Image (cartoon, rainbow, N blue to C red; front, side, top):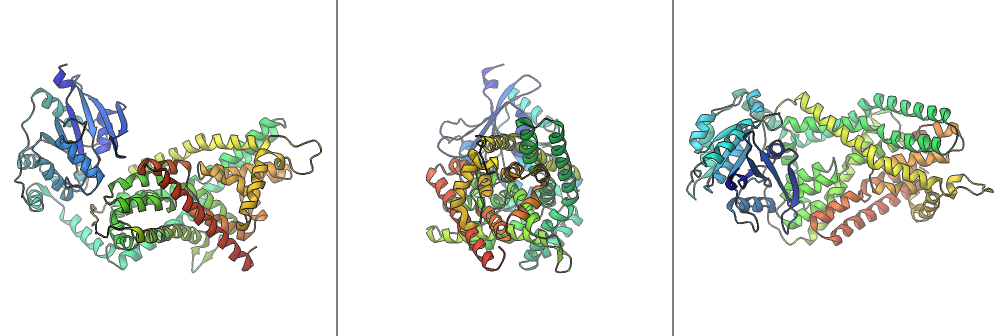
Length: 619
């Protein structure tokens, strides 16, 4: 292998969500490393591509960009790297511009910008199989001729879906291609994009007509928002209506397993660890998996259908009025799954103050880890009955909790707006793909991945913390003359009783206080912690075998249950979220501010809820 071939550098670039990273993963496999660019928090991915001919190439996955006229740090880095201006980074020998074949209207404009740099490049028509399924006909030869650069088809999510691209890269190494044809600097890119589309792409007329007809209603300033509210409302109704039968089966199975272990093993620490610690703790979390999957099934279906970008468009003006950029929608939407990717997604926000505001309010979005806690408390204190002509009351409460988080985020960002100096407007740029029916296979894969992520957390950090909590709840042992349950003499019991003084105005007992501590590592652990605490503090074996829901329903007041629900709307996120805030802002102070204001909101809102509920007779 020659030194020239070994040092060849390829750079993948393209709009966000074009499948660029999936293509990078297919090209490099496990031969990749991730770091940050020097002096900034933008992620740097580089890998090695080894082709069937034996050649080796360095492949760089550049940050997603809508334009090379940067409106964000990501776009500035991509521009400078392509031009060879970024300190310590040699210019790439070849640019691979990845485009979504189903949405060339937006992506071709970026291709023309890249071509203006005059560097050797190739256009990868990604998702070309999806374009064909939707009736989009792309004359690749004509497009290649018009652009003056090679055009290849790729399917990044399919095995060997980049074979044609790899073959082209090998040919380039053997005989480097001439630079791309440059457009005049003052070329009208929009006009040129329209000309290219007319000359090379044929859209099915029916698709365009259906899109226009749906958009007249779904993007309407009134009916569009009403539709969005109805969709979200129905999702939370389904979370309870569809998941309950499966949850009952899981609950009965874990209860029977715990009883079998208690009856089979001799009484002692091992039986207690298995039945009261591991099975009670992990079973108390796994039971909520059906609800999480129902929620994500809807989110994935909405994303696949092309509806979510339209929801971002609808909410843009509202968010801007509250002090957030329209670009904040996607990061905040991501935070419904987990605040960490949501915080990382703020890198696309160009205004530093808008970005900071989005980072600070992202933890207020109701992440999936809160759902088990919400489901437990709603099941214990909110009756399952129909109201208002057929709506499930529990689903209504869950919808209200999600809305409370969203409205609180808008309120906090509005207050932060008072400290902003930049009053300029940064228009939202989003692609609006054609509507399409979600692919059942893609939905199944997405749900399977979400289930694995959840179960890995259960089998990893939640398992470890459950065992640790069991140890703290069992040691030291009660003295011989003990008059209280043994758990009161344990280390965890002593901590819980001490914290109960601090949380007494909120109506939290010492068992709740114990559960709040491991809940800092992962929200779901609060449920397993309560299950373990109540299993060990039960008066007899029969009580220990009962499900957690009736135990807390009988042992807590309604005011306490409502206060704890409100606590989890605002409570400081898991430690991993704090770490993400520190990493993205580079500031311990910002991380401390985020944790501090969330704790203060949680404490004050819970105390207000408890005191009002007590006065209304809910004690």
